[in-house]
Picture 1 (tube, rainbow, N blue to C red):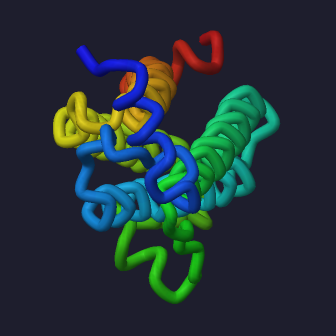
Picture 2: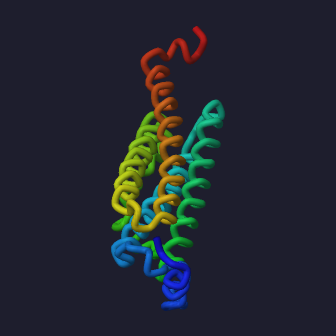
Picture 3: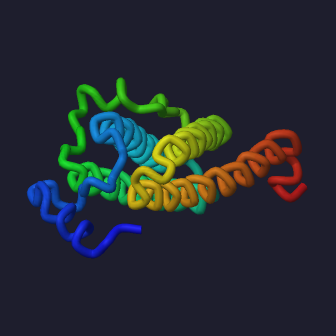
Length: 186
């Protein structure tokens, strides 16, 4: 257990470092690099959700388009949270469009023909990739940076929810493809 004087002395060291104190044991360079990979992945994911929502052709698929837009909004919010944490750790979030695709774990793919099955599958794959990446990041951060770990855990929870909902939508799309008469009520 640290004594009061020791805690105060440690807090007075490097005041310009903001919330990063000597008790933060994370490799800041590696940590911000990891967070920038997640930031790029969230930005690409948000753009893909937005593209796919715009490509949904039928008015009957409006709920899917609305869900995809909501996912895009959540991913943009997640990117902002990641950028804010990167800034707190003394670095800058990297939004340069020329490098987003290279850093992202998500491969952007558009479906201009509005293929709903392909759209749902591509977004489900992207969400699952982010779930795995966030799980790895949580394990890597561990107890070295509790604030970053909690942020990653919140983002993981959101992505797991998206993946679950996309999985249900995928099953619905698959059933509609296998039984088209049921879809049209005949």
